[in-house]
Image (cartoon, rainbow, N blue to C red; front, side):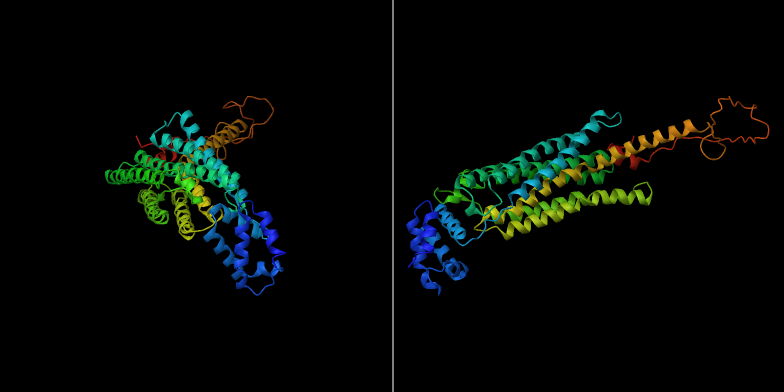
Length: 417
């Protein structure tokens, strides 16, 4: 009777194949398909769901995964795999974040105007810890995280969860350090007492929330190894309501991000510079609001797949958003300093071009009251100009324009003197 479907299934199940076959036999009453017509059986959703429910009720988790894998393989259902995309996203964003941190610290180290401050040290530490987050995620993806759970080896599931435990721990710390770095930068450029008090209040909230967040992550399961061993259902332990924890944590995180990103906007509106330049700087800070959007997407994906039966595949989107949020936060924290780097580089290039122009033209400058040097080699001293050449003398009042205090604050990252 089961000449076609059952042997195909039992040959692909490594442990306790008889139990899986009995589940198939027991659920044949739910279908009108012939027992030998496995194409019809595979297309019958009621039969497939009844078989899966029987396996889940009578088999261990590992046996259920093996039976599911065997059933889908028999039915020609391919295993879905997002691991390559996960590795690519995390690696590219991680490289961008580290490059921004390196540029910022290198510029601070060699600059004669600015010095390394607490904000630079914090972002440097955050960059290193972000590396400690990105690498475990890539390793977990290499082990198979991002594929359907029944397509992974049981040992690889456990190992990938161990690596993700480290990644989530590093993610909590890196995010808090990024927030502290931005707030430390505000303390360097803000001189108004009211603004500084607000910064200190936010800084205290970030420290308290970061510590509570990190310890909650570490001890969310009792014992701790239940985080990566509990999925098998063969060890005793318990975890907090991870879905509720993630929802509350995500809400507080979004509130802090918005508070930190909107804090300097009133100061930016009052900058002593042209409207065009002011809009450029404000738009640079507003890029940070992308982080809030990413946080909302991460929270949505976490809540949506909080109770999934296929976590290694369904939770991949949550890892995308976690990695994007953390690395993008690092990029945003470095943007004011990076703007300063490009500002100084542009001025140097402009200075070289100006010097080149002066070498090609007379000392009176370019345009009014200037003359083009010819290759005759004659010394054209005053009073020795050829007959018929009109000479014009121009008195020019030259003075060095000083950048405004607001410009110095944002470009150099230091308070005005």
